[in-house]
Amino acid sequence: MKAPAREFGFDEYLSEKMRGKLSTESDSASKPRKTLWAWVVATFFGAGYGKPGPGTWGSVAAVLLWGAFAFTLHPSALTLALALTVGIAAAIALGVPAATIVEREAGRTDPGFVVIDEVIGQWIALLLSPAGWRHGLIALALFRLFDITKPFPVRRLERLPGGWGIVFDDVAAGLYALVVASLVRIWI
Image (cartoon, rainbow, N blue to C red; front, side):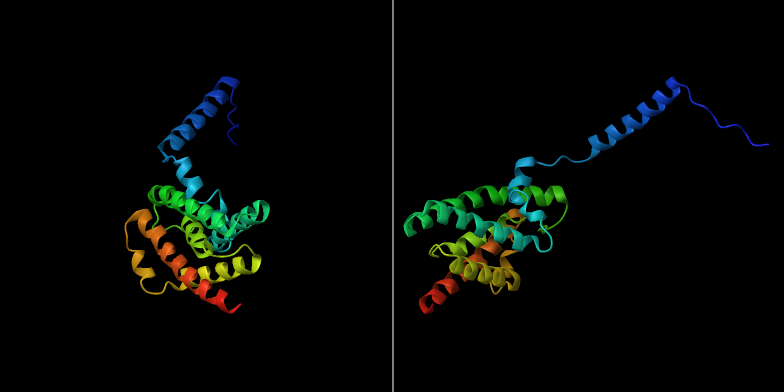
């Protein structure tokens, strides 16, 4: 003969529910908390969660922001370069510590979703570009090329600790792209 199923009364049911809830709360309390500002900066407001190729999404976001600024405000070439310089300096000042924190909290070295480095490198590549989609696309293509291939000494900069290595290899790739884009503009 089969044993009858045990029936729970409301008090027993509530007790079981509370025990389950309490264990869930203690599980979430043991999980490390994310430093919100660092994750927002490091992923460039979520662009780093784009798939596939989060680095490309970060670069595209940087070009779109540059384009929106250039085409809505119509700044002079000097004003556009100064605005980019201020943006680059602010992004480096916030990006290095943010990348360091996110790298530590994620438990991974140079996580792909950290794209503030791509934003900085892309803005460096755009630094002397006149406002125009053709110039934006050239800077985008060249920066992605140098960021992916990492010519000497770009790859060596990745060895710097924490956010320094994450950010400064892309600074160097951006400088390569800036020089080549400036040379290309002579011929187009």
